Image 1 (spheres, rainbow, N blue to C red):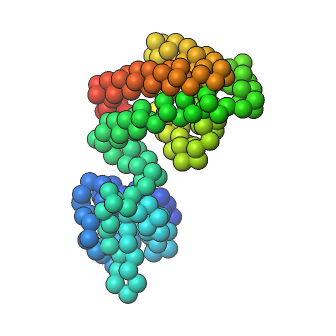
Image 2: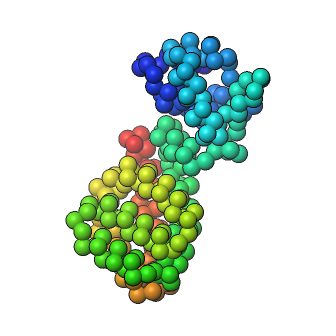
Image 3: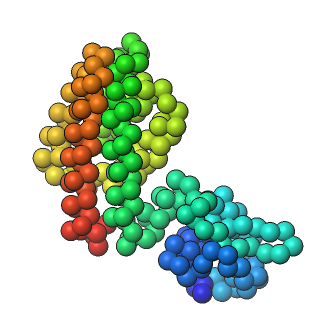
Length: 233
């Protein structure tokens, strides 16, 4: 069920191995984990390291610790969170395309609405922030992240800001693949100028349209890439 961990005192590696088995269905919801001693011996880690990993898994909504009884596997579809989604994305390559589809679908639904709200609520501070980013020597991906963050903050929806932070953590890694394509660079650079103008002008309708168009474009390109190159990610 478990294999030896090659490096000592790496609770993250222990956690990753258990996550992999839960997501793969090797460990099923409701199943009780073997005793700590047995698991730690099979993984060749001390019990302190194992306990650190188990605490992490509990915080991710994967395990339920029942005092005096043991540790049970939870159904991650009922109790998982965004942090767990990130683990699934990085650990389960066969699920990368499916996870991205879900992420992009959610972004397509909410980002245009937030762009419209940002245009209707932007302040002088937000306007200055747009101007500074556009004039900066940041890389294209850095500008893209910054533009979306300004829009999120101008929209003043704390939940969207947190969700966007989650998106950005992922796109910092995977966005490099997207921006290798020259056409994508041109579309993104044009988007930065157009969305900034719309939000600064307070034109909510245009901001919503511009955001929707670039999200739909990016979604199509990313999913097409994943379909043809999933084994290279």
